[in-house]
Length: 489
View 1 (spheres, rainbow, N blue to C red):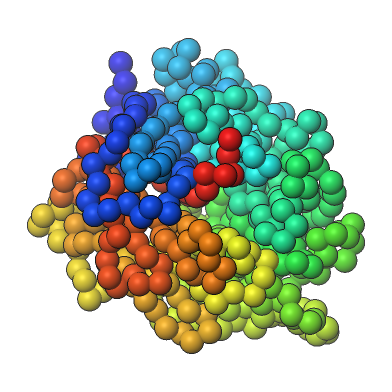
View 2: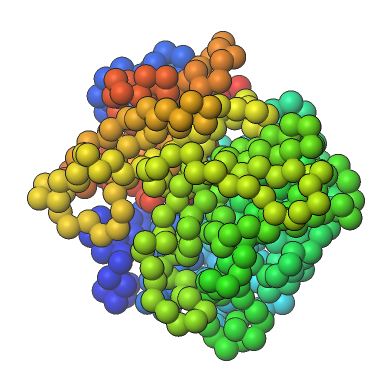
């Protein structure tokens, strides 16, 4: 018998779906733009069976991939679980066999294997499209290849054995100039190790270059940034150790005494030139983009003031601090000619934002002007009377943040809606940065359903171009990506 009653955060709108399905020719409000041809892929987590521990991180839920396919003004939807080794083991046992997030010492003896922690990945964080293939990703294991039409799981992908790290990031970077993908794995040689392996994969999907480096301390390296010349590694204050894991504890703990570090190295070197720049304590989780100009590197990122995961405790035993769990759009400048190993940080906008940011992918690694992400508009309050008592932050706006002028343009989803991460879709035939659409899923709490938003990225205040209506609430998304019709066979 499946019982989620002991996991209160998984009830109501956020209860697991536990089903797979498809909807042909979805209901549409408005009109789908004729030039939108392709698929919006989303990846997130959905518990097939309840977690073993009520305080486990939601990051540990089973991977679920869904797709909105656009063709001839019609949108079809499909959603399926990612068939990881872990999913299949749980399904065969009809119960949860795996313990805390990234702690195999807490697993059932039938599956426990601390020597290969990557085999317990749920692959629930992000989709990737490269060299004509679709993958699901999570930073504690290797990619899983997915059939882009059926969403069937085709197996684990190790780049024909050339990928030597036990792990693979959820945030590889795609170079629009060369077609290369630069990706990495941290805790690359096993649990709580300080090894980072960095790989360049050519546009045909073959590993072409490897770099191995170490970090100042073991920490979560969730996202990085890439320029045409450099690889950028932001570090945050999450720490762990093998002793902690062997004691059966949670993997990550926040340490307020740890400074922020940003590592810089040549993306085509051997790693010996890596240089660590120190700054204030920050939770450096996601980035927008970066570029190199002369001897300087400019990084745009929505970094947090402190620990923003309430399920990862503070090392000193202090309670979670909501006032520090705020992200702001920041501009960071690093001068490689400076003798000082510090960097400068500038707050570009006063409004706190969601750190799941996107840029026009055609300008990744290059100088760019716009960043897109969600935020809560205090002038447009959430209607709790109609939507119910929703716990947590409500993100009711998408914003276009102009890094050059400081101007913010906003799309408002509605007073009973909360937005998940958006993706940017370039307008076919246009080469202007930011000319295209934003697509993203909104949770309609009042109607208990999900709606795919389509908005003109250059005219956000005008509201929807169209909404695709699902007759149910679909799985929570972490990250999504748009694939043009020509990118996948």
